[in-house]
Amino acid sequence: MTINEALALDAADPLAFARQRFRLPDATVYLDGNSLGALPVASPQLLADVVEQQWGDDLIASWNRHGWIDWPTRVAARLAPIVGARPEELLIADSTSVSLFKLLGAAVAARHERNTLLVQRRDFPTDLYVAQGLADLRGLKVRAVEPDELLGAINEDTAAVLLSHVDYRSGSVRDMRSVNAAAKAADALVVWDLSHSAGAIEVDLTSAGAELAVGCGYKYLNGGPGAPAFLFVARHLQSQLQSPLQGWMGHAEPFAFVDEYRPADGIAKFLTGTPSILALAALDAGLATFEGIAMADLAAKSRALSQLFIGEIEARCGDQVRLASPRDPSLRGSHVVFAHPDGYGVIQALIARGIIGDFRAPDLMRFGFAPLYNQFAEVVRAGEALADVLRTREWDQPRFTTRSKVT
Image 1 (cartoon, one colour):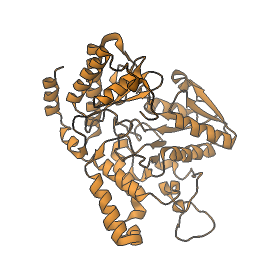
Image 2: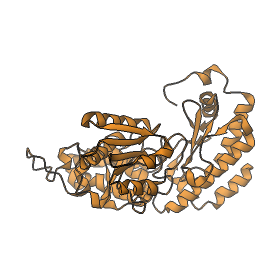
Image 3: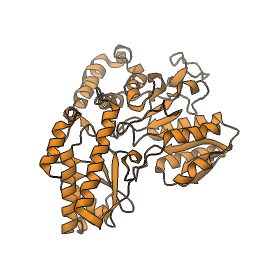
Image 4: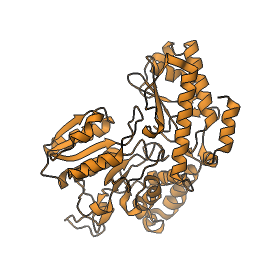
């Protein structure tokens, strides 16, 4: 595709207006929103207001005057249409790992007569670490299986299944409805990690029969580096589960300051400590970038961008790279992965040209497409740049092949 043809697609894009909600550097093609979302234009002013006017002028009175105390649920309500949940089923709290520990711990306690946590091999490492740590604490066993073995591995000894909705490496999408149905038939619980899907593709937790989920706030949700995570507990399950991390904000009467813990009703019981107000403000601005956006339209653009990218790379680069993502867009999230033996150096050479992707060992080059701000013309420019890097072997230089700590 020519640049002019791609520009015509951008001009006809029904979501083109959303790009104006972000601050993006000139001459940079940012294809790493699957690791850290771009800065919303509204974030600096909102943070300045919270710091200077609310914190600065109103001090501790801001907890009531500006409703800080309710922000974990108020901000979470913005997320409801993005993930297909009811507002009262969502909470902004802690990091993804801590939220995962809470829900996984609550799930295994609710199935205390069972001994197995079921996970998928090579799932996101922190999820596996959390499962292993919890298993050690509770005297459980972690059973790791290949993706095609998972449904058949759910049985009467499975307390909980832990699974990423979108694989962080290949971008493949797990069939949420099928996994939930298999788990329900065995009376097991499933905890979904939506970190690489929420805000990029259609997610409908309710219609898919999901009961528990966590997700990251700083990737496609644009909440800023280290943004707090979210957790989801289906309404019918909230009375049955208890958080394994009890803290004063999850108490039924947090300001009674009594010695005995009594959990709050509903989703609030999964709060623990004092919420991070500045981080919540930044995430609120990130979630506001989805206002007026139909998730079906967002998902359609995600598929169009990634399909175009695959076509451009294969046409321009031939067999120099190998597609490591599902070819069928219905089986793929919003990032595309190509493999190259010197993938690290290739990505570094692209970054030097202003094309920002990332690398995962051993040879995977990841390119994320955030439908709110990525453009079709950027896809063509990225394809041209990758083809040129491979043609010139620009990546084969010491400054591009020496590994850095962060990519």
